[in-house]
Image 1 (cartoon, chains in turn purple, brown):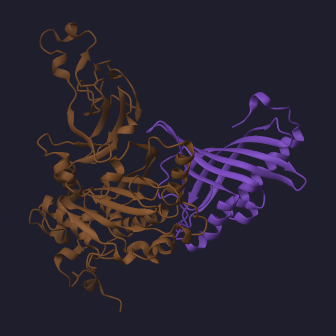
Image 2 (cartoon, helix red, strand yellow):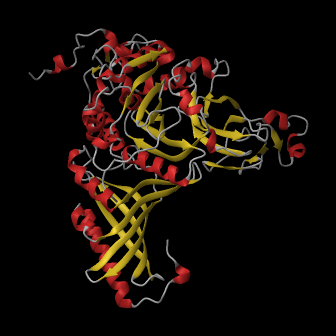
Image 3 (tube, helix red, strand yellow):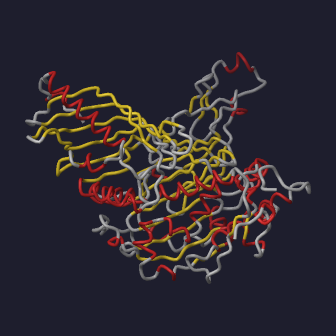
Length: 164
Length: 406
C-alpha cells in the first residue's frame, strides 16, 4: 500500500517516467510478451492477486508468487489447456509517490481488463480492480519490486491461466 | 467414419444406464422439475460454520431451488436458516452477503425479526392492524438446518425431510476423521458464473478420465504409482467416493516443498467425495476444497468454491495452505480454469443439438470407470421419475422435450 505519510515530493519528470513505464508494461501484458514483462521485474519481485470477500468478510488471495514462481507459471503455459481469448487492459495511473526508502516509488492505478473472444470478437469485461505497484529506480531503468492486483470483480467466470 | 444425421441421433449400443439424453442439460421443463423434485427435497450445503462464528452473525445463501435464504447464528449459538424475505411485502431483508445484526430489519417498512425468526416489531402495529393481525402472524419462514460433516451448514426446504445423517449416510466416513479432528475455517471463497448446466460440473467432478485435460494431473497423478488403482465406491442417495492417492507434486516444476497436511492425512494424500445433487468435498494435501452448484437456468450455473484450513493455523501455515490451494484450484489455478473451460465448451456445444452423452467406461470401478456419473444419474432418474437416458421421451407421454436433439 502507499505510504502517504512518509511520501516525499515527486518531480513531474519522474511522475511522467513512472506512468510511461507502467503503460508500456500494460502493452507487454496485453501482447502476452511475458518475458518482456518479467525482464523489468526485480529479483525480489512479488506478485499477488487479491480481493476483499464480503461473503466471508476476509481478504482472499487468488495468486501469490515470487519471480521464480511467475517465470515457471509462464514457462508452463503452452503445456496447459487455456482459453485463448485476448485480454486488453484499460489503465489509469492515479497516484505516484516517492517512498521513504531511497529510489522506491509506489503507484496506484485503476485497471479494467477486457476479454475478447477469438471467434467473433465479442468483448466483455473480465475484471475491474487496481494495480498497487512498488517500483525501484535502477541504473537499468524502472523495475517492479511488487505488484498487487486488487480486484473488485470476484466472479471471474471460467478464470484464466494468465497473469493480469 | 463420420456419421450422418440419423446415425448421429441413434442411441448408443450400450445399456440405457450408460448414456444420457442431452435434453437433461438444456430443457427448461426438466430444469423446473429438478428444482421441485430434487433441490426442494434434498439437503444442500449452504456455508461453513466459520462464516458465522459469533452470535447474531448472518450469511445469505441463494438456494439451488431458487429461494433466497439467510443463515443466522442465534444468541444461543444455534445456527438456523430462514427465507431472506420479509413476510409483509416480500422484500429482501438482508442485502449484504454477511454481517452481524441483533435484529434483522426490513428496510422497506422496518419490520424487525429476532435471531429465531420471530417478528419483534411492526411500526404502528395497532394503528394499522388493530386486533386483526399481530407480530405473531409475521414470523419468518424457517427452513430445516443442520450443522455437521466438517462443520458445514446444510439446509433442506422440505419440512418433512429425513435427517442430514440419513441423507449423507457413510459417504464421508473416509474423510470425517480429518475434518473433525479439530475446527476448520474458510480462508477463501469465490463464485464463478458459467454458461453450462449444473450437472455438467458435477459430472466433471464425478469422473477422472478427463485428467488427460490437466497437464498438472498428468504429471503429478496419472504418471504416479497408485493412480489406476483408485476405486469408486457408490453410496445410497447418489453419493460416491473416490479412493485416495498420494500425489507427487514434485513432478510439476515449481510445486516442490509441500510439507503441510491435514490431521490424519498422509503428506500429499488426496481424497474426494461427490454428494448428490451437486456438492464435492475435495481434500488434497494441505487444504479442503468444497464445490457447490447453484443453477440459475438450464444453461447457466453459479459454482461456489470454498477453501478451508485449520482454525489454529499459524500465519505461516495458513499462507502455505492458501498458496497450495491457489496453485491448482483458485480462479488463476492450473486445474480449475481447465475444468471450467471444459464445461463451458460442453454448454456451448449442447445448445446446438447433440448426440447422446456417453458414460460407458467400465474398468472395475477404478479411476477411469464412469460409474460415478452413472450412479448420480440413477439417483436423478429415480427422483425425477424418468430415465436420464430418455428423459425427453417421458414428458407427459408427448415425446421429446424442447432443447432435445430430435
